[in-house]
Image 1 (cartoon, rainbow, N blue to C red):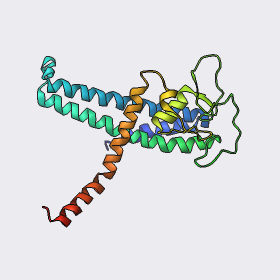
Image 2: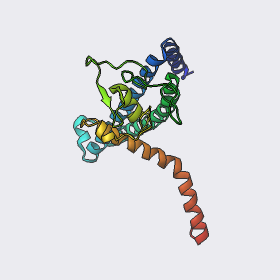
Image 3: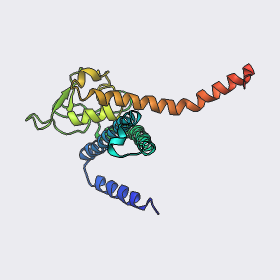
Image 4: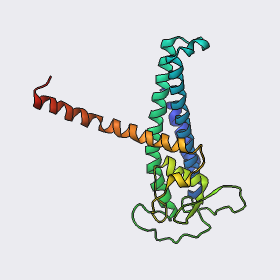
Length: 216
């Protein structure tokens, strides 16, 4: 019965999204995944900082026992990495599925729908030239909403233009200093994901090598 509130919340979110247009629905989903990504980033960094403070016994300043502080830091790091990896995997699937509904993006090949230079091909909405929302221009000269391209590249793990599939240089696209930690954190989450996925295979190979060499 403990999962009933989660089911109700998920059902309510799904119902609210079903009433939106595909363009607004895509932006709302990007906003949600970006929030989860940022929250996991804060949890991971916060847990790491708390672990460092505990190692230097600075946790005693806050009247936190060492065992409790270490447990909290490890738990925080675990949940930060876990939800970070899960959210990026879900976002990668959603970006392809939902962007394909707009018509400007297809997983393979060039889209059949011609892109208007004044339209963001990710969400399908017009680009605001009044400065209300920042606009990013990629090296292929296609332009996108700042929020959309962040969701596409940083959260959705895409490194190509949504329209023409040209390679995107993330370091040149996101030049602000506060963007680089998010890119590095995303790469770190991918590393954790690969380690977890390949860990049973690596352990199996090591076990077979030990057996073949007669090692216990």
